[in-house]
Length: 348
Length: 206
Image (tube, rainbow over all chains, first blue to last red; front, top):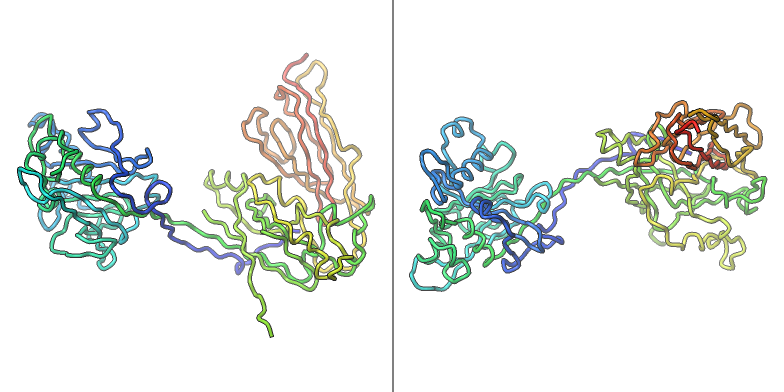
């Protein structure tokens, strides 16, 4: 027997589900868990991938508005860092005029000639990154010394807990400022370190500000071969030379730091209230409900007071196609003395 | 004085293959009705002689852990609950068919097949009774009211038609290997019947 739903029987709810960003649902990972994936030298001139559990989690890149830090850059040849910078700018800037003029990222009220980019892997971030809960801890050396000194860390988070999104934002959604702090609690708004685009899973970090906080030792700046030594930092190598490699510096800063991050996903819950009134659903098509070739009711005491056991609920369309099915953990007894309400929940 | 339990049972449902196909095709699910079922419940476990009394007659049934739902729409909801106030029901009506196993035979020297007609009756007799015929795999099958699905289609698809009888045939020149499938014949408030249909090959004239 089918029973039609009324308008009071169905309720739709939208919920936001958050999970740890990292493989397996972990929300925090020390940088020592991250490895750089194997990429070709051409790919590395644009970006590095950071992996956890052999799965890509972040892509790291460095961009310069004029192409500095590329292997090659001239009036007739656009360097890789310029291409990176302009791609991300084109992607995030909502103003047609600024795009036309090639204004560039404005962070801390200053046009940034260069920036570090951290792009989250789509598979891990689901619909978007969860704002107001993340911490990126970058590690490096605090001064441009020629000898190894003690390291320092810079904790970054966004200001979404206390501040409305930046306006105008981006063509695709909210933008928040990145400041020093942890888990959405901003420590100081003196220095804006960058912009956070949760819908794109993108962090745009001012290279100048990061360099100012964690420059690294002077010998480190121009030598990618020193990445595993102490004294690493984020001061930019702005030479136009084969050896210039700034993106790897962000990889090292993350590998020596840690990341706390959550994914966010919108889900829709459809609740269907299936109601059996006292007089309904008290007989069964189940063959064991009956006995013999003439289908006599099996138990005599059920003639006047039939008992059925609801073990499943089916949701059907107009053509009686079974669209969804739910099973109860244990059957519910139904008879003329009882009513049953089963809330069937569909989530997708 | 105890506190009455007013909990609503909450069940997490899963989409069947048909539901998923609808979503994949961008169609709304179009859920408009529901039904309760008791597939898997064995009423021979109901024990009116239980020493603990009437509250415990169904203990063996209610204590049994249930199997979880699967997406195949032919696994569950095969026996539905029904009734809207009927009491003193002593016998259940049931559907009978002359043959529970029929064969769609190839026409000699042709690539056509000869249709078969399934003509169910219901007991006690109901004049002009109509039935729902659920063909569990319509690939290669020709039935009025169901869109032809090629015999070699990778995914099985079921189809339902209603009527007093069902004429069913094989799609001409399509059947490259002999195949059997089931047809469930149902009618509300009636025990269902099941017919197995075998289709002979008809892809050549030999």
